[in-house]
Length: 258
Length: 298
Image 1 (cartoon, rainbow over the protein chains, first blue to last red):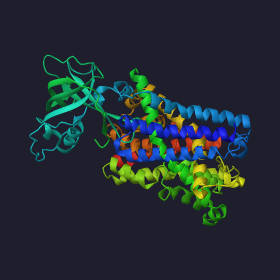
Image 2: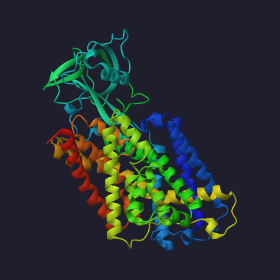
Image 3: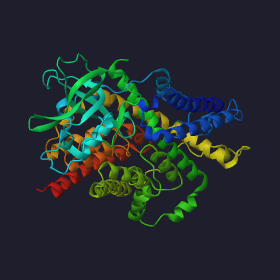
Image 4: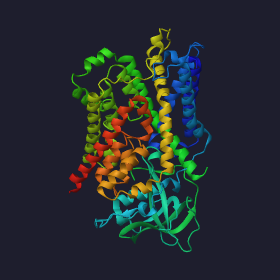
């Protein structure tokens, strides 16, 4: 592979990488991959990749069209032009794969299939055993309307939250291990990207008659915090007054600090 | 897209995207070393004696904070400038954890539990120093690390435009593409593993002190979570697993993992990679059991 072809391939891939980052921000899809806390770093990365691509493209003009790139590479055994060409071709094909996927597909949030076989009963949030009867702050007049805010509130006041009106959003997760009509409300918390996603689940006791919602359906639940005893655990429970199917939110993930 | 396919694609693309800033940090650090650090100067800076060199290399992450995605290019370039292989290996093993960013994120994840932070650092350093000293003893004649080389037009005597900046970027681009194949393939393997390996079964093994360590170490290798984020995942396991198991998860995951394993094989001799795997798994397992015994009692 000639040095000019190598530089051209690299320039195209670097510019495509920058274009992918720009597209994901423009389409509001970056939150489906990486936490918004890293937006500045990701944007800077796109900028640097773009600059590298432009400079590599500029270098194409100066490369000798027939000179082999491998003549000037001191790499690991890919000194022969054929080997170098094969490795370069393989590299470009592999690097192209996530770019094509990211540019062409519209990502969805992780669903229940991402649990990797973990049982729902292990995921349900519980009140700490023997929670101290500390002075409880007054309950907010208005319902907590954000799942993250509810989880932060639960961390702060534990079972002092019982009776708190809430409006929470998440995915439905059905399981035979739960009571009749009950389901788990599932969210994922991420620290950096969806590869480190951890599930957070709340037990939901639906109103009567039970709502007809399927696994992986996003729902908004209005209700109040309660507690249910199961196998020695006190499960954080949402007693639902109303369950409404909704679209997947723009940012489907919680911050991992929850 | 079906759920599993969507999960595979989203995890794959997210790992690639998330690794990019850290890969760039590594390749530009490598380019700066290439441009500004001479072999003679590095030789003057290195202390005499293998132990001193290994300790210095292991602690170098404090001042060169690169994670596991970016450490290889920098280590290779330092190797090309004369840093011995055993010292470069110690740096590769320690730097992803022994750096201020990762230690701070661990402290945040564990809500200021400095015992966990200190033990994590100590366990990573113990593996780096042990492997470094063993490599110095067992493989003294091993060749230094090599990368794509000073490929660049300055070495060719070409008329350059853009000067130092162009040379640095050109070197960074060469390094970037030299490791990208392995970064992306590692991301793909990790995504496939996360999508299709039933980790619920593995987690279910972890109810005992020994079982929890045995369960979390291979899980960390399979999940290949980056060093700035793995503490948050470990904390999510805190209600189920022992402290020793959580430390084992955070330590082994930065040394033996799918995502960077291919790059490690590409960079280091096969017998050195085997030494790393054996020493890391053995030492971390023993240390984790010792931590459980000290923190939780006999």
